[in-house]
Amino acid sequence: MLLNNLIVNVEGMSDALPGVGEGPAKVVSVSLPEGTVLALRELAGPRGLSALVDAAVGQYLRNRATAAYLDEYQREHGAFTAQERRAAADVWADAEQRAERARGTWPAAG
Picture 1 (cartoon, helix red, strand yellow):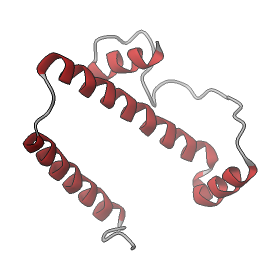
Picture 2 (cartoon, rainbow, N blue to C red; picture 1 turned 45 degrees about the vertical axis):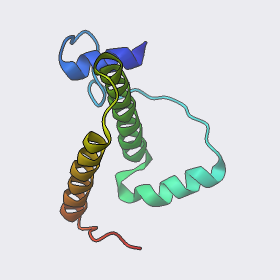
Picture 3 (spheres, rainbow, N blue to C red; picture 1 turned 45 degrees about the horizontal axis):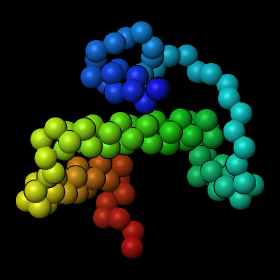
Picture 4 (spheres, one colour; picture 1 turned 60 degrees about the vertical axis):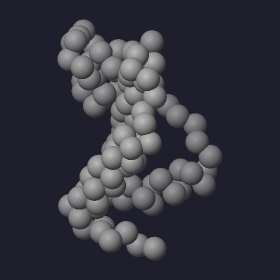
């Protein structure tokens, strides 16, 4: 499964296939509803639709790999405690806030 290869590449255990965001660009065809395409094109602006889709798909794949890793970790070590979940949420919120500041979008519009 390609997701397993993603995890292997992220951990640096194999370089047989390029990891997410690596390797030459490949042309693919994707069918999306017209309204979705219009919204994507408006959002993409001068960066272009390909760059936006690449970033979104890369993020999605990394999120899936992280979720798979966390599921495996909990199977081996037991479920996270409420305290561990709160600590992780605090770290995540701090990281998001720093990223928003770096992008100039903090505080977030409400």
